[in-house]
Image (cartoon, rainbow, N blue to C red; front, side, top):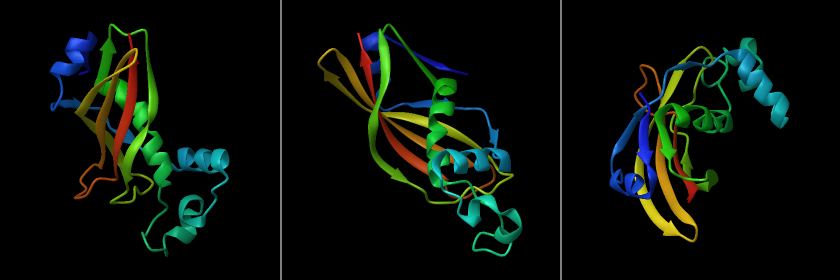
Length: 151
């Protein structure tokens, strides 16, 4: 279920709350290969499943930056901000990759609104996005994502 943040007051009221979770997404080799093509990162631990079986993770793994970039896929499933003319990615304060995502695993994201600041023309928020692996003990990725919401 998507959490609706209605305007400036709605965003401010949600400060410090967990906003919910996305659906699960299966990480398939095709997605990893397409990311490798897009970025030029063809390291064997990502794109050679046979060789990766004998590697440090026992299977091919998703690129860390692929996992991070999927936050843009997950966040609209978690939260929708209404009453703004636009919302834009402004950057990230911190990104961590505590655990690799093996091809064939499912991941999802949860988000918490950890900071709201008034800026010229609107608000700036920091959402802590935690991407978890189904059945895993550590998150795959934790991102402090900064967004600007323009009124």
